[in-house]
Length: 453
Image (cartoon, rainbow, N blue to C red):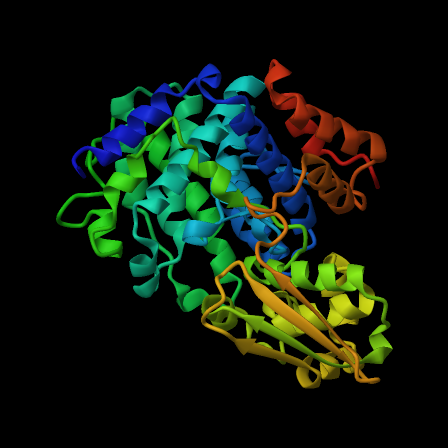
């Protein structure tokens, strides 16, 4: 059943039409696009954003492709930079079955190519759908536990396929050209969890975006590549990065079941697995009346994977580790009753009393019976009372989705320091009516040129 998996996915991406996509999938994708733009605008405040921009600028001297938040760079530079912006402050989406961020690899190259050729909003939306579906489909075929057990990180491995699919769809690739683009994309697949805890994990996303862009541009010239990069016995992605994978699952019900609808988004600017904690705490705070000063201790229980990833940051260095810390997220949310980018600025996370509370009064434990989307939070007060809350599915997950209105508010919050109110509403309106745009250029112009000082 594994024969031709790459070709089947390539044929799907090349042949996808707007009319073949169910209305609900189109709306899900517009939500993902607006969420990605919200993340990118916020990413201009990222701790390493200036370093990434220096590298992206060095990729080329031309200024032809727009940056979200201001300026232009080369096609490659803008793809890398916008990809990084979408993940810079840990607010972007994640495909839960593969723990992989999707939109930072797919949307930036689609924006760059869409701007270059003045594509319609309908074609842009269809290309993003193709890219997100291909990325997630390649991922479900991996047998993720085996893939993860070998230390690989999804965005840099499967992300190039989605990037190539989006670019190829915008350039009108036939199935053969798309297949070769996938072969070139997979030849660049890379990125391991050795980078965990460092900003390099965010570099995997934007590098995946650039890899797919280069793959598509090279395939467009007629460059020859393997036609079965996923299942080739010697060096295929599924055999080399996993245990042979489950290739039949990559193409099961293709075009009928939409795997991209398993992509979740985040309300809070912290790691995906901490959204469980935040959901439990938000529900607990909403249901009970107490002050931060009343708290004696807080206990948070996580499943094994979230605990391994986020339970070891009782103390933390700088912004990125604070964003990974279950201890800090718990402490600051209970104190401030919100978690925005403000809570990840130095004046906040370096507060001595808050650091002490996170380290001494917050306990993070592991319960292997809990799933990766679950968390239990218990607050014990100094007067002996205690309150508990359990998250079964974090807000923003497919089972507990954020509404388009909530994502609009996320964009408004992220964009307020940079854009005028009218510009913010125009961007929201344009994304909401994306298929009505004759060209995406006006939307991109609005995102590039903030009219707030």
